[in-house]
Image 1 (tube, rainbow, N blue to C red):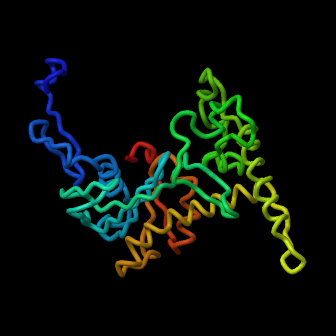
Image 2: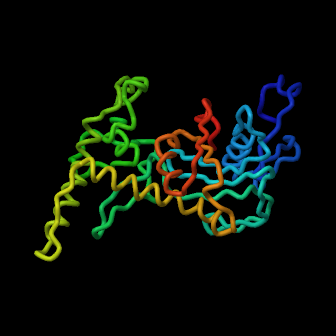
Image 3: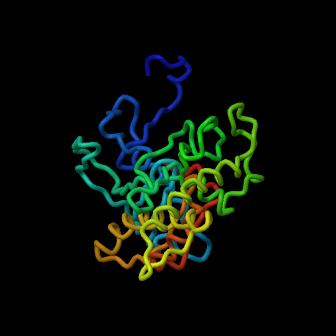
Length: 280
């Protein structure tokens, strides 16, 4: 505990580990905490996904933690599921870890139209400059803007600027910039329509897409990317995905939960009032 205030000696300091447990500072080891953030989200999800009249132990829960750059998915059915060896960024780690599947799709995942395909991620616009709606990509031409999933949600009206504090823009005192997000999506729309028109024929005519249709298309691609790890944890292991509750947390999860549940046949979504602080 060197480097901390002397008063810390009288405080019990515990560190989260990748297996979902806690350890004392003296026993802490970095390789056992590589995925401690997502593990904390899984534990929080397991403890909070319950409501009156339904025994918590009777639920099969899929944790859906969608943040800024990625989405972490886990399964809880009364016990935590662990793995003992994982490979991250080419590095193999042998240590107990909660079984968390991650996909590179989050609120900051970049939207691109490439070779006739709608592409979401894995590139991210990052915390800075962030999505176009954050107002920190100023000075760029429309075609040079880097829209993200958040921008598509802003354009579609799924994010209401009035519900957010005025902390955006270069001086961090402005509301979300809906017009800038629309400009960025319009540039993508033009790319989509240009490609569609160039490849149209009498037998295969092309109907021009609106900005909303393009934004919705990117959201659909992102949703499907996030459904894949859920199927890997359920259907590929012999579990019925539709029998699970989708426990949604993280800063961006609520914007996509209904579409994810619908695609997987889930009938119940649980969204805790403090879902935003349960994330990794």
